[in-house]
Image 1: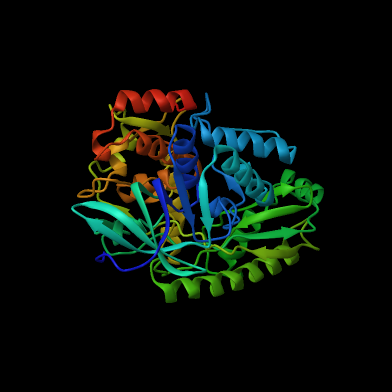
Image 2 (image 1 turned 120 degrees about the vertical axis):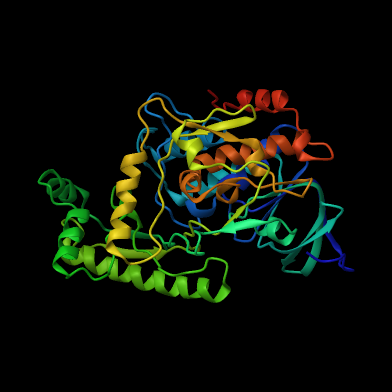
Length: 433
């Protein structure tokens, strides 16, 4: 947080959204569609975050087993992406993502909604006056400049703007350890017919890996084997390998993460070629330009979402949507017992059909700041429920609520009329209990 500097004005908007991943994109679209003058600032060259730049190969399941509960902008995006891919939409399962199709879809939706946006815009400081963010400082091709606004939405995933504005936050577990990130990748030249034949015989990439792990011959000390997901007739995206002991807020550590992630992807390519049926001629096409960080800061908000809210299937008076994804805390170390616990906890916490928990609007409001909302994985939560809320579909839900609320907000985002907000969200397709 700094005092005003004599920097030139880059732009002014009613609502400034920082970060163009799922929560930021949904916030900008929701705000624009409800009458807000919006400017979205994204440091990369595209919308979509981990679903595009991060090459995460799939959206988490969108159904509670009875109905699709992530209604509104996510449902719109997912349906249209599937149509363009020529793929059947299955809300009960992991939905494959074609990142190039998704990039273009986001571009078109942004243009249709009339939002203003800038790529290559890195927010690096905040100006705060009397508990209000008055401007952000943006590093771009013309140097360091100011962007002013009335309401700000921090959709960075790291609560960067909130931290710059002086908000309090938590980081990782009690010892400061976080979930390990992954650098996703794309592979081509795969014979999925051969894969299917082997799978029917009980021979899968996961079973082969775990057998090698038990024998001590796996090329990485890695029990938690996530996925290789088919995304086209001959290609797949991987969410494989973890980069342990990495601080996602440290520039040097992040640099190490990209280098280590590319090394792991090459190791996985060799593993699949040598050991997995159907992958004998597989080729590593690309590693992601965005590291898949699962956890950094979590703001301390007006309400803190907790594991108790998860287990009691909470309903809130200020509810902005629902979530049904299980607790999914990836290991922070190579300890095999800690890694085995990940899948065990996911299984133990998985809801029955028709069950979900509510998301409180107040969890997006950082204490002490009047005109800032923080949707996505950095909202106010303990680690257990954050590991459920962090996946992309619920990030769309909190983002669209933040955007709609920003339009309704007066001097303080705490004073938004919840009946009016929930009515607008319901009109968008949001699901409530």
